[in-house]
Image 1 (cartoon, helix red, strand yellow):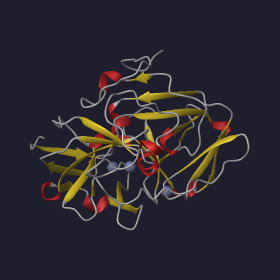
Image 2 (cartoon, protein in one colour):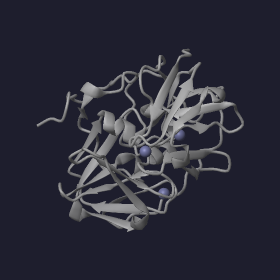
Image 3 (cartoon, rainbow, N blue to C red):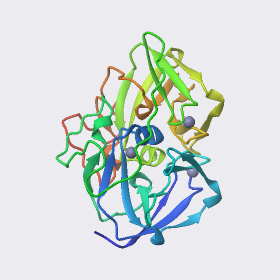
Image 4 (spheres, rainbow, N blue to C red):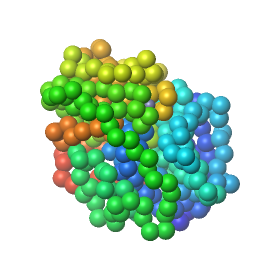
Length: 286
Ligand SMILES: [Zn+2]
Ligand SMILES: [Zn+2]
Ligand SMILES: [Zn+2]
């Protein structure tokens, strides 16, 4: 347990907030709603007292998606980053660790909802794993939705609310776990897993008009695309590179590919240990 105050922010910086401890251990959640909302292999949350939470800036800039009758998912209306939410029925705020700055003073302690984890993500650490909520932690059911099938021969995906859906043909070009600070903030997660697909193999099935694009100011290529109705990260079309960058968390089926490396591990989250034997690169390999 740690009780110092820390700050957090979305990728674009419009929304900033402060949290005061005591902080519980970090929990990695593999449920399909978290994976889609973050666009990441899993989300990592820290719980702290509601009374220690307040916005420093941009509270009017927070959108929300009601993923169940009691559980809502806040996000930045400009950049789509996931923001802290109140645990229903408790004086507790639950914050995505990927958005926090500085040392949390706590480490990951468990995985939950591993029964619905992504087929392409292998858990390689020794932390306890729970099929659903861990003992002593409880909340609403994840509220997942039956995904609509992709066209024959295609791999498909969608946002949490289902208004945006996409698919691509053939095998992706590559699949990488990225630990750079931009990806961590964009996905509000420990790291992202992105698929790269040739632009002419990719299409939105519906909802493209709801996709909001946020090119990060000052960045050559980096940006994020998200569903403006629910805040889920969705594929971003990078026309200058001729690829669609797909947050693997929003896939509805197995892409038949697995991540081949961890990149930008030189800027990984201090609280996250990389385990397993995938190759690691300090930055982008040549
Ligand atoms: Zn933002
Ligand atoms: Zn979850
Ligand atoms: Zn949506």
